[in-house]
Length: 217
Image (cartoon, rainbow, N blue to C red):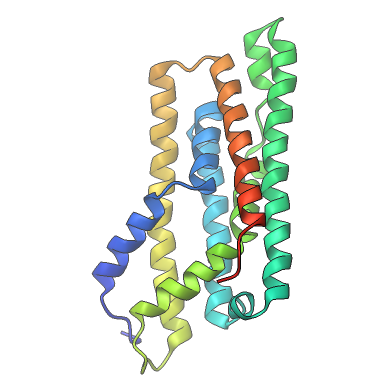
């Protein structure tokens, strides 16, 4: 259909790629562990929305600009790196404020780190959509499963992209629920949640630096 081939291999490969850890998984797990599965799902939905932007951009040929234009790649790369660093610093600042209040009441300290679901959604969205490596990934991965003589390559690209994103959302929301369940079973203390935020914030700083140093391929 539309020149799509080896669909089973595509689905299996996509699931394996989604399982690989990265900033998206870190954000989902942190929000689920500290605010419950709904917060983790909000981050997952934001990530899924960002992925759809990459899918349509690649299908329309916009992402090809990132692979051919060094200037465009550099601009998106630096904006994305700056945002990831911003998210990391925000986590660290929230944790520090929580620790300042922890002497009075652990529950109060934990509450200071909570974010509205809308903000968590946009964190997931921007973390994904501002990463040029995701755009280049779709340009490199998806066309391998579209025949060269396909009569509608953009439509085939969108169909495969939606399948990839749907499977990714299954994994991400499953990860959110599992992390929240594990945190509840382990009875994660507010202080542990604060340290989890601290570690994740540090990892986001490192990921932002790594993205800033990434080379166009």
